[in-house]
Image (cartoon, rainbow, N blue to C red; front, side):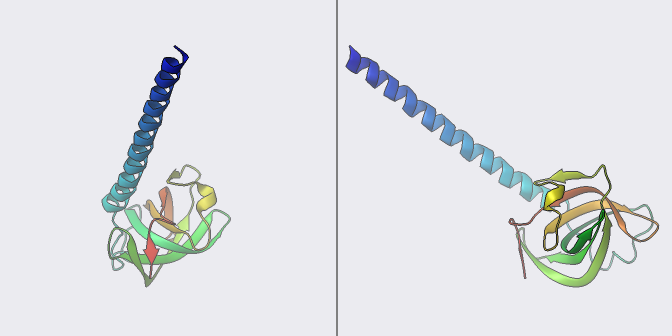
Length: 144
């Protein structure tokens, strides 16, 4: 009788391991797809549009941060070559981190020099971008 009980327990443990593995794979897959949809739906603004952006207009860009401090940041705008490959441009963008900024795939602690971020925000009077959302892309994309 004990042998049957042990066999039954082993089957349950095996089933639980399989279910957990499938669940983890599904969660990872959903996360990767969500990141791809974020970067695809929020394609970077053309570098020619940056200087022409009107006050109060919505702006989106992928930026490699060159300096961060006191709620402000600056970085090089990146040109998209594929879903995961970007190239540095000569255009820079000055960013104000608004207190209500939403963070995706990271947190405010991930906003540091060298980080790659997708910023969405409003062009303010001082020609800076006041952020409403930041997607942390560091580690998910490559920059040439």
